[in-house]
Length: 479
Image (cartoon, rainbow, N blue to C red; front, side):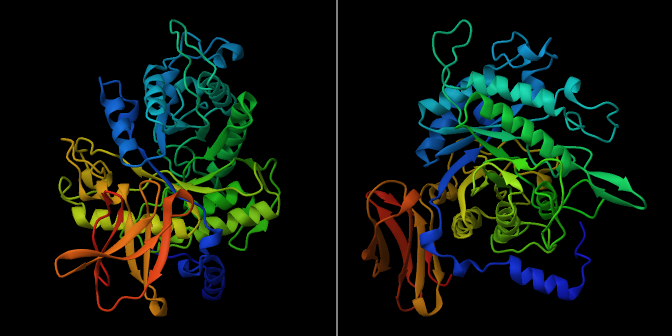
């Protein structure tokens, strides 16, 4: 990864000033509520009881949305014999069992499912896939993807009963076209050769995939909502395996250069929600070094081109597109020797939710509710990012997710007390004094359970939030 962006210093300074919005300037009245949830492959497991057990636990922890991944090549290993059969949710060549189970279990727990479709079967890839391109990534056919998306949307339309069953499958309203399309591990080629250099290839290719996917899903039900594939947070110089997300998004929106100059494209991107995965190399307040990389504290780098594209009518869908985060995590030690401490994970999780909410993100999904078995290269994955150990024991982050609470210094305004209540009713802010807890403030949460209040207290008090019998983790002011 390059450690600098080769731009003139004056241009960088001007654009950085325009693109970076201090979170302290955010207006609470203009901010959305906050929905939280999980993305975990265990939700689509066919291991007896695994899907049901962990989806039930997700609901207990306060999740509203769960992301369910469909590997297209697994559901459709064979090429359908016709366009009509490809769009037929009951075609005998499709293998829906794992997704059917996950959707039913999600609905049984009152959870809203989001289905992500990625990784093309070999028959739907472009010709001439090089050995360097991972299987399922090489120039996926937009037409074939659209047909499969239509079949999936029909199957989970809320009106479809599978052959041999007497129960209608629940409805899925949220659909996502691909995963991290700015990475070669999901979509290739990322670049094309131009003279002695490289030009972006994947954004235009993905735009066509997204538009055909959007039309197919909307063709089943106009009220279904389509997310862009969540972009990965970091990239490399042109020609590398990862495209920086800022560049990818601008190209997808037909905006040229950091000045966001509109350029002609054969079609504009159609979607309802913009998604990003702002994994941080350090803590939540870390800013990405490269201008076009986007960590947790850098969401303005997405907001600015998105609002510019909306103003110029360069994107289709709603007039105002929400921003979601459908993956976020840090490994813990234990069990990963390269992870952060359990207490730090809990602290960073809560701070991340607050910081993303302040920047206008309305939905945040944590990657993994339960740790996965160790990967061969444990430092390169997030298999230990769950809120529960593999044996089912909770980490402190489980309580932090269930009832996030953050105390921060607000200067002359005193202390800022932010959180997301786990239920309905007023929240009490309690202070530890002489071995007992005393209420110092109450607050009525607003949309999405969020409360954000200021309080003047001397010293560095130990605080927590309470709602009925539910307690947040404790937070030392100034700590």
